[in-house]
Image (cartoon, rainbow over the protein chains, first blue to last red):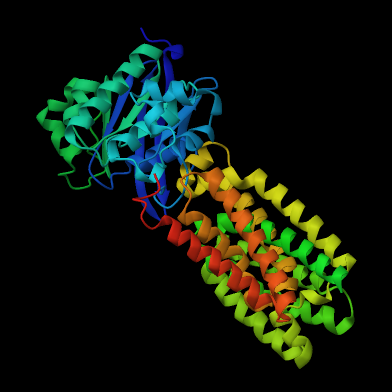
Length: 232
Length: 260
């Protein structure tokens, strides 16, 4: 039996409406300590809005309960760093100047070659790793990743997901990942939350291959509010 | 005579360094023209100071401060950019200023006259510059982070709206003291060009902010000295000195692959 203490996050009946548009409707899920939850769904399904709600950055209804004082590391989908003359070291120091080398080596980057580089000249893969270093630099309990592999080629994508899984396992960090790529869900996550504008599903990641779920995940469905499948 | 020159150099150095430092954020925010436009907002305040015989700095600052708060509040309500709102407010102020200032004083307000600085002006310029630099330093990292990602800034506890307001007020202070040197027409230069020159050749934030301040101070001081030597108005010479630094920085950059 699960006790309440096993959960880092419990969300019940979460709804978000922005500029009179319903974005999230009645979403409920739990995240166990040390587990990886993948959030999947088509473009515009409200995945990023869900993160913003979890971080209390948008108005919402329903209940979001973080356990105790969970320290959250957040990695956004994109940065506008191309125009700012800031080095990788300076960027990470904005959060924690004492652990720059450690954070960079945790994400497989050599601080000697990369710390003094300008943030705006990094490759897509390097930038994602630096962002992950940003998120873990002050040893959070929970990581929120918005599309960790945006702008990254397929090989680096696998490497980044492997690294996230390692980080979660090694440090017991609970991880929530937004992803476009459904194929990574079964391999790298324990649970999944599939959302699109009008339906949502929460369950174990291995269920992703169920035919009945494909419509929710890929958004090939028309909105009918009475047809929300439930799981778990 | 020599006393006036010393006063002018001190004021130029203080104002140039402060404007260069604040301007480094303004250029990053792509608000370069905000500083320029904001300077015109000071005109009615200068006019009242000149007409009623009080230090025009206080008039300029009062108008800049009020406009900055107004623009900040309007941008929160309307979600319009600072640039758009400043554009709307500054023409109004310019119109009012031109209507209420007699012509000779109008010329001084538009183009500045550092040769009339007294000890009081020096004291104000130095104190205001130091305060502006110190306060900017406290919000510098937060502003840079919010430029890179507003979400990261908010999740790290940066109060973005409050920080922006303080920043606008600091720019108002820098502009108000800069007007004495270059006048309202040219003061925008002091917050834009040194930072642009520094940005061309900087690969990290520390170098960028330091160079921007140094270039600001160097432009102002060399402009004042040359103007005194050639007996020409200082404002345009400060601008020319700064532009020379800007081109020198571009030449330094040429031949290098890219700042990395």
